[in-house]
Amino acid sequence: MKQIIGVGVIGMGWMGTVHSRSYLAAADRFHDSGFQAKLVVCADDVEERAREAQERFGFEGYTTRWQDVITDPQVQVVNIATPNYMHLEIVRAAAAAGKHIFCEKPVGKDPRETAEIERLSREAGVLTFVGYNYRWSPMVQYARQLICDGKLGRLTHFRSRFFAGYASNPQGVLSWRFQQEFSGLGVLGDLMSHVVDLGVTLAGPIKRVVGNRETFLRKRPLAAPGVGTHFSVGQGGPMGDVSNEDYAGALAQFANGVQGCLEVCRVIQGHKCQFAFEVEGTKGALSWDFERMNELKVFAPDEDGVHDGTVRIVSGPQHPFHARFNPGAGVGLSYEDLKTIEAHQFLKSVAEKRQGEPGFAEALRVAKVLGTIERTWESERWENVESSL
Image 1: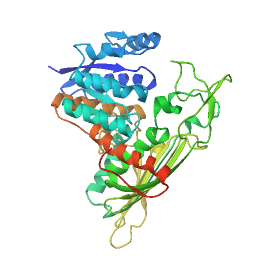
Image 2: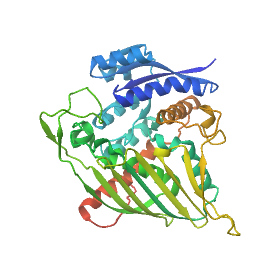
Image 3: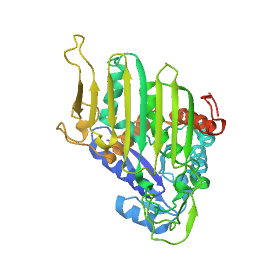
Image 4: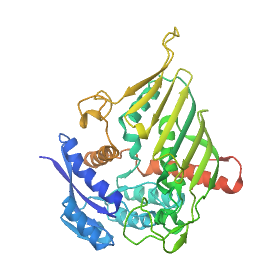
């Protein structure tokens, strides 16, 4: 008999629906795992959205009070998909109630909140997980395997960028992501958190950084509460101030000597969702781009120099997780497939009663780098990544 894990989802906007779908899909894609989620209750302060989510995904109930999710005795796992400013309060309550916690990145509204969230959950002894979903791409997993196996030799360079033009239209609405009081950091938290997570995962700890920022579009149309997403476009009307950054860039030096360049932007033209990285070492190199998620370019020359070019590898059943979705090579996986893998990995850690990765400890590792980049905006000089916040 399968182990049933009761899940409550808080926040039924775009990401909350993605998570709900992922728990259902994981039960099928990983049908032989011996455990599966039961969707117990969903919460959203917009009742229509909560009720619709119950009907769509088969939750046993819905509520407009997130506190009801925490107190429900059937809920073992609390899944947080709300705006960033709500995360700390929800985690504090969930940890105190002994519930395991999944939270979307960057976890806290700012690095100090992330540190507090990590402390609360660790002291409560609950299991945690974070939505760094891009690391679950079969080709990213394979890249990590090649690096760990020494195929690239000693690493020398890591470059990564996340250019997502979702806010390139000046009429894109002023959602919570553009407001410091609700989101905290702008793209430093939203996009750079993914970049740093993969940088640390693939190339190792970051020792010091220096960065800069810019806000290119300083006013946006006001958004209707509870309607649309950060991709929504307004049709004129009152305007509000953007209070966090559209762009962030940083140079990084890793503890092992790797030299890095990190860059993110949400208003860039031409790029739709280019989350990409290149890694070079003394024996070879590789590169990956989310817009071509199911491909990995590898440069691994032979010793005799005859084979001295880049090879394009396409994802196939021989690569991590691919066979769970398709038995054929070259048949692409999607963004939501990565969220399905993520949901399975979290549920697996709960079923096995062990802390998996990435948890809040890994989110804190990222937050320390983000906090240091933020500090360099004022100091305008290289700063060491501090061991505590």
